[in-house]
Length: 392
Image 1 (tube, rainbow, N blue to C red):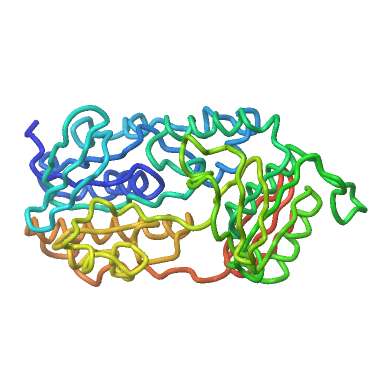
Image 2 (cartoon, rainbow, N blue to C red):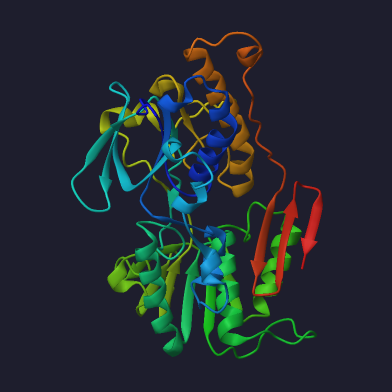
């Protein structure tokens, strides 16, 4: 077999990256002429993928979620495809050069290496302020953060969670049920909880994506787990600095100062608000033209092409500006990416006729109210497609 000459590089090994690579290999490769000259090369900082939405439950105890299903090795997921059609590289992208069409990455061990790309899919995702909710580095660092957190739980008597989105609400609920149990059916809230848990949000309500009635229901469910919600309140600072975010002060007694000047003393502080988009590999000189003000890759919302980066460059998932970060949006983006990449590859290969006729496939974000938020182990709120109203 000929040595692959045309690398289709996929940056990222989570939902977007794995789904994109699978779709390309399954739906695009079979139609390519001289397909043996192409290879999908995935570059991921972690050798495993994990169910990121399950982190608020999984971080508390291995007994709450089957860890063998929560973490999945990436390479075996591609064994169904021809051997030379896929290559996995564990490494972190450090520089994207649009002009030379190369990506430089730092392997898990060794010196930085550079790979040229014929096509590029950017699916590097995002990182969270707390290292307990995402692969901010890799699977080893995630598990280490969980271990430090679990060791602190038995002596914890007060927890402050900053944030009002799904992650903050879920982790407050999971901790509430795990540490305090649940109030009786006829009780509006859990009186005298063993552990004081305070959820602090700068918004007028928790779960801003959902309608007010669902937010109110979520707050009522949290009260039954011993969680107190402070709204219209922002965390101004924490001491020690970096508490909840940095490894050496991940689960340590913290003084939380609110924007009102009030202070809360917490045995554990958990920053569960916002995300940082993983675009550190974009060169400084390209950042103003390549990134949106919030730090995402400028992506055509219809075709998912990164038009300023040259031909056959695409972006999907959290890091792409095409849609609100959400798993259901990623799943809707993948068929569009695969179809348009196929069209671009066939056109560049000189294929004519029905295979490249017609218009590009177009992505259209579903902006209807869609979010499902577990609160504790058996309750939750949510909406699907703006049509279904769910209270478990």
